[in-house]
Length: 135
Image (cartoon, rainbow, N blue to C red; front, side):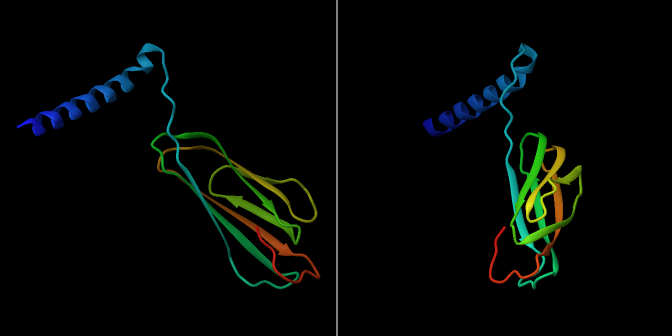
């Protein structure tokens, strides 16, 4: 008989905790947001030859439960490639202008809980490159 009472006590404590958190903004206190960002990156082909173009595809997601503000996707390109272009499903991308490699920065802005963003970076393998390189 005591097990059901303990269970009810736990449920009541959780309900009070949720109520207390939801009441904090009304009291002028903002709880810390809980943001869980996930990023994956793949290349469009492997292997590649010198002077051949290929793409890095970066997928980002906010697994929440809170929305994220001012989200950036930043990718440092290896020196073995030259930047060609970058596109994003949300926001804008820039490259720092470095001839070999460089840094691509995409300002995707706000990403709500459950939101996703895709970034595609097109590069060209520099002439004379042999061997393996990583990004």
